[in-house]
Amino acid sequence: MAAEIERKFLLDEPPKPLAGRTGKRIEQGYLACADSVEVRLRKEENRRLLTVKRGHGEVREEVELPLDARVFEAIWPLTESRRLRKTRYLVPLGEGLEAEVDVYAGDLVGLVTAEVEFGFERQSRDFQPPSWLGEEVTGDRRYSNRSLALAGAPPKPAENGKQGAMPSRAYRLKAKESPSEGVRRIALGRTEKALERLQEVDRDELAGAIHGARKDLKKLRGLLRLVRAELGKKTFKAENRRYRDAGRLLSGSRDAEVKLETLLALRHRFDDLPTATAERWAGMLETERDELTAAIRAEDQARIAKATEAIAAGRAEIQGWSLSTDSWALVEAGLSRSYRDGRTALKRVQADGSAERVHQWRKRAKDLWYQLRIVEEAWPELLGTTVDQAHELTELLGDHHDLAVLAEDLGGRPELVDRAPFEAAIAERQEQLLAAAIELGVQLYAEKPKAFRRRIKRYWRAWREV
Image (cartoon, rainbow, N blue to C red; front, side, top):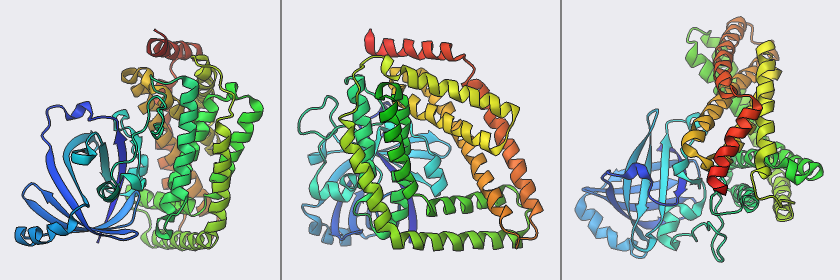
């Protein structure tokens, strides 16, 4: 049984990259649907398939078997009232990835989704979707093909707050909304998404749900920093603390998994590391991860309940946020501060590349990345490059931090006697990553803060005020 690692996105309409492409018509129906298992039939041009899937969210298991046409036609009637039709287009995304864009027909006409499949989990986590992919709905069971076939499409997200429609959860401000309401919409979307991930999650999907919820909370804190001046010191501190503490409740086994992945990546890059020591260390990390996961699962209801309570309380507070400004001034101070603080952090790292200073720079770069994504629609063709640079920088600095954590772990294991080669490999890789990060950072922070602020302001005014 193969593991399938996918992320799913909801598109407003068929994207421009589909122009001139030929799609593949697909019709599928469902024979059986249990809690986390589904059995389906699919017609795909001249192919007839029987597929069994287990699980939800980002990582699932799948078995696919070809069927004789006569056998397929004999059992196809059993799927009546549980079918859907769509046309699938493949859109290259670079680096060996492609998006499967599904344009639905029949009762689901108007619905467009896209899935991106990955070879391994880290590749999925590091993927930065292009803006045309729209809102991510990975793990949202309403958009699974099974749910679409059985229950139809969910209400479309509203652009203008129309009654009866679900507000968009897109992590960006839109042209047809006031900035203050857009900020509230984004904040509500992140809280609701985190709550959905944590509620009624299967035990086998706990790790993925926690990882996704933590990402939602990080995005929410990036939004808070963007509008901290408007919120006021007291409200900002209280809200930021709320979501920080909720995120900490959800940490643990995920951090242990990162150490193991970092060690495996180090071994892949430096293939002359002592095998026996590497395998012993990896075994220790695997054992500790499994023990910690078991401990967390034993307490997961209490932890998740406490985090859920905090997030739900925060959601109730969002409508009461003091956001009266509907102009560039709403985001100006926060965005300028993130850029200025990141630029200062770069200079400190250039003077002293300690692990702590690199980690602080990473946090400031993440603030800038999140906030630029929120205002990216002001001028996507120009801001998109800056967004990509900020994301790449956070990845380089994140890998550097993961290695620092791994080095600290190694320092606490005196039983690993052959440690010097690992210490040298970690130091060498960190040096490479930091050199690349500084080179990229010099480009990203090349403008003086005032020039950066004025440039983004011009984009904003061209987008919102002209």
